[in-house]
Image (cartoon, rainbow, N blue to C red; front, side):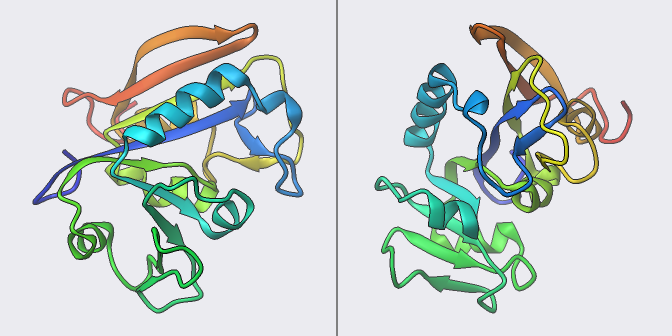
Length: 190
């Protein structure tokens, strides 16, 4: 449990290129990152979540299919209901920390699914209990948008105290790895 005072689990989800990118430089997702098997697993995980955390652009680009959302944006002071989506709440992370946001939203158990973009993934680094990472092997996106701003997820996640616990091919050339918090690994020790 990474959020004190709750039994909430924080789980990241991303599909990346071999060089750690989640999108092209213009923010669009290349067709090679649109993998049906990954999409189905991703949607099922979001359906099981108590809350989906994403950035403003992702929220605007992908209509909400009826899930409760927390949308990171600097257009509000701290926490405000989204007038355009009754299941969404806008959050300025500079105004409130995640534990207080969850308390105010009444979420004290279940999974909080973090779906990106880069700033959202970065913000959640100290909170991840797990991270489901799909990688399209052999695909590079030069100049693309990275999953994490500091390095490839294979280096960021161990630095945050997570280790690979399960890896399997979900489609030709696509490997999904589950990273989980290991109490024996101190953050930054890898």
